[in-house]
Image (cartoon, rainbow, N blue to C red; front, side, top):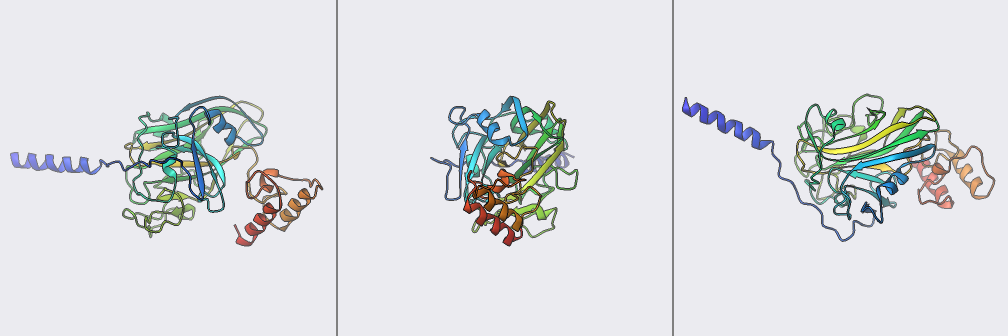
Length: 346
């Protein structure tokens, strides 16, 4: 009997310790910058949380009553910040806001580790706890504010990335994020009510440092970056989604609420990030190159941009889409970018 009890104890201990992960390293950078992307942490002075909201909010939206839970500091400390990219930027859009369950600087590529970790010492979030199926969250970075839209729909464009790809597919360690508009999470897989999460968008399990080969779970929205020897994307995330658009019906010309949040789940190891497109929290959906606002990118948009450059004031005209290369100017480079979009079939 005694031998049986000892055996059961050892088996139980082994099961428990098998669920405990050792946190990985954290990047120590003088500047979170490489040839493709520059990441800047919100320090509360040079870059404030209000600056972050200003970057996030786009046409048709007024905001107020900003609150947050985050670590502020330099690129190596802050859990909220911004990024600027160029042609080789791996995110899918050139500028935006970052929220992390670790630090924003840890997202800087190339992908050097499969377990990058920065423990923030922050509590979790009750709204995110509700998405994990009862697994408690920790290190939640949360940004909340009220907003008044000028229309009955709101959009936000984003990419989710994590170090927990691909080796924690199907595990309890499943970092979580959500965009809660009037209390409802709208960060969903397109055409479904399923939250965007590691277990819900992937190409199957793989061991550390290896690409996954299936089975596919909504993998049309997944980009695998797990091969440490030859990662295809200049970003630390072992995996990341394609650019996704969240949509919500809202009360026009009245006060609505939004909460953007991300957290570790199960433990505080292994970082995740959500990258949100600049000015994409808007009543107008951004489609780079769609200068004439018809929802398509085609030769008519090229003509529209050229007419704008020549001073002909085309109507309709969506300047946020006409700036196809997202450099803040509408010029011949946007014509070239729009033509490239058309030719690529994106």
